[in-house]
Image 1 (cartoon, rainbow, N blue to C red):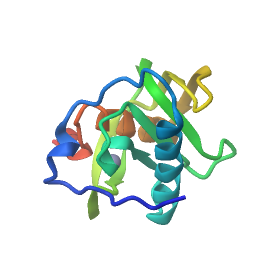
Image 2: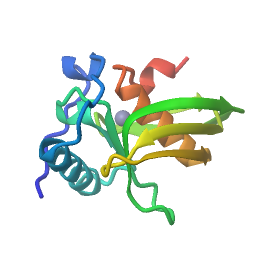
Image 3: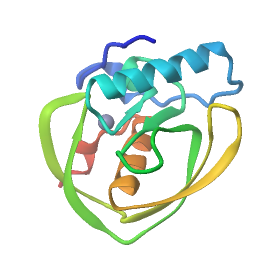
Image 4: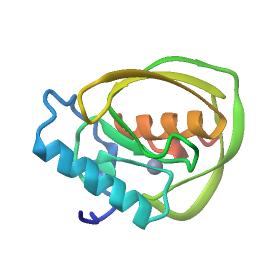
Length: 147
Ligand code: ZN
């Protein structure tokens, strides 16, 4: 296990589009393990690969519910609906939160670390976390949504 350095706003890597993962090798598995360790170390509810400087379509989430930690590889947002507005923060924008409007419901398809495809539906905080982390894979930060 290893804690990786979290890149902060101003770092170009946070503004780049990530590449699809073509194969889950030991390299990806180590990255995922380190991302989970780093997320817990920093008390985050999610972390995306570009936040540790890696331009791959991977993020991890643990909102403290019964799901525990969830790994998303090559995620695809299939559906969103409703709206919610709440304070949002980001490990890459330390010490700041802002009100962000997001859909209240999301349906996402992704692969887990074993290469198994799954579909997950989330509401409220889970939906917010999924959409926030998914944005990171396209170089979008939550502050871009603030009006
Ligand atoms: Zn973030």
